[in-house]
Length: 172
Image (tube, rainbow, N blue to C red; front, side, top):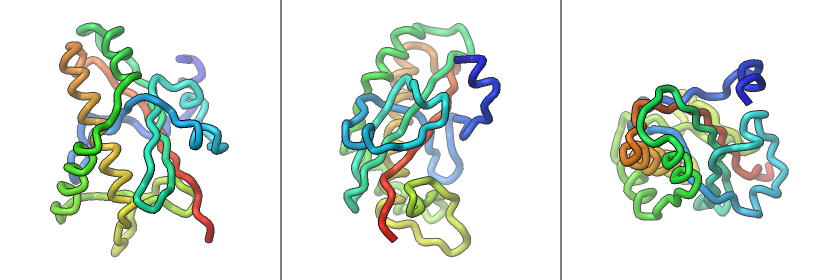
């Protein structure tokens, strides 16, 4: 895996906090059959993720996030952390809390989903849709859950990772 990833450009580098609403981007578990069978073209490293998380947006579009974590420092109980991350479930209440926070923050930076289901930076004057806000909230809730598991396992400063999110395409 390390050799393949060294040759591949990274889609996104995770950091503990993303500008705007402090969104840490990471993971949860349990890929759903509908999205998993949907024909998404995953980056090479995302074809064998440590975790996958499937969710449905307000419009009914299904999305899947795949994540690979990597140990950056020998700290804490890495094996327990990875096992716990692979079985995370995002609570609806956490998603709704993040939706409220995002909507109430005039400085929030919310990427938008294009018609093909890929993330794009919101351009000047772009108004995020409910789908965009909820997708961002799901990512934030996952990040929050992962950070909690990292703290519990003592690896909070000893990991990094990559994520890829894809959603169903919409008809023009």
